[in-house]
Length: 140
Image (tube, rainbow, N blue to C red; front, side, top):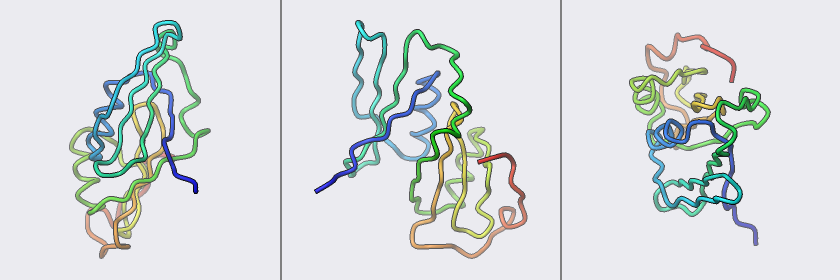
């Protein structure tokens, strides 16, 4: 049996990234600091699910460039309402890089440039303005 445990991404600003994932409904689970390794691990997850995201902050890597996040690929989350989720993220200053024009999928990025795919639970909703007529804002 195989079980998905976690995905690790390196972050430059743990607080901003944790706040981003909390907007998506994830909860903080635990923090592990390593003085000898000079890093902190932050574990977050969707309530009721075991899989986690491990955010790794290397203390000596402040301001490090991770290549814009595209080399990682993306994380995918199923959301109850794609439009409400995008509206919430946008209200908190998150750019919707690929809007949910057809009511099924959107892409946003974390503060460190990691692509996040959002998929509407249960399939596509009816197209809804202003999303239906929006163009992509940036690369995803």
